[in-house]
Length: 105
Image (cartoon, rainbow, N blue to C red; front, side, top):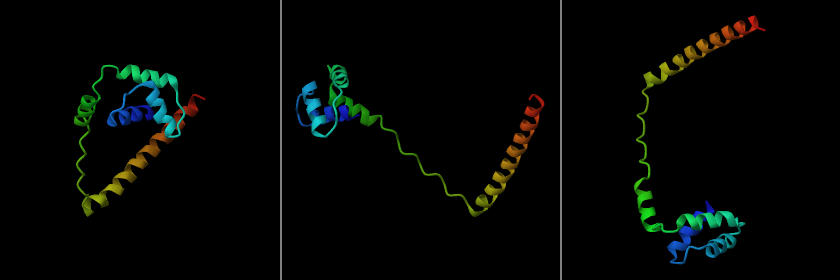
């Protein structure tokens, strides 16, 4: 991730996005440089219009979810009863499975 951030920073500052500059930014930030990742990033960015990529990425950002309505007092009373019933059913199933597995060793 830091390699991409370095490339974006260089682009934003109007500097050339190349192996030497990316390595310099990462070193300046106190990170260790993996030359293979640097070369792969520079190769992947060849011929890419970074401004257009940023614009298209911001258009594809997910939309925030709408908040769910707050449960009413009546609904909140019913919920624990439903949960207790579901837990009792699950416990019965587990006991049945345990008994069945004891038959087969």
